[in-house]
Amino acid sequence: MAETQAQAPVFQIQRIYLKEASLEQPNSPAILLQQEQPQVDIQLGVDGANVADGIYEVTVTATVHTRVGGDKTVFLVEAKQAGIFEIRNLPQDQMGPIMGIACPQIVYPYLRGNVADLVQRAGFPPVHLAEINFQAMYEQQQAQQATAANGAAPAIQ
Image 1 (tube, rainbow, N blue to C red):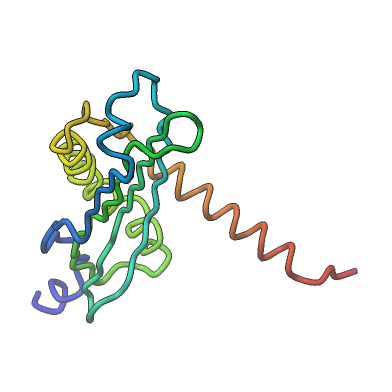
Image 2 (tube, rainbow, N blue to C red):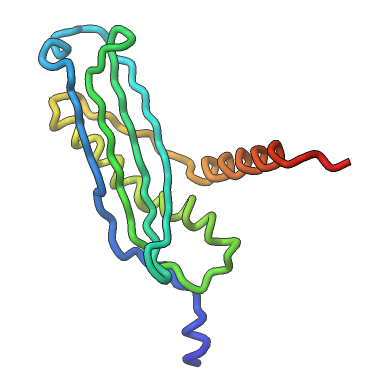
């Protein structure tokens, strides 16, 4: 019985935390007086790393760059939300989806809240990051990596 328990799959959240956050308003206060509707560019990224035996950190990063007049920055927010997860006794082929889909889905709502709060505290209407389909994002990354690997390999005839 003890041997069966030792081999049972383990997936536990150890901690969710704001790893990094920055806000820049390089053109304030003059930019705050403009009435033009800003353009918002949002970039998201996911990264994961093994930090100890069976312990992994997954980080979801958001960059929100808001401009007016094409190139004048209203504000730039960069935030990294991370989670530490204990993951043990899973087949290796399941680790990619766990690290690229399951963990980011847990971390992302915290990132959304922190970005909205940071923007609002800066005096702007909150930016609400859209829901993300991490499975589609992961599958797209896998397809791009496969294409890149196939493109780099010499053709066999």
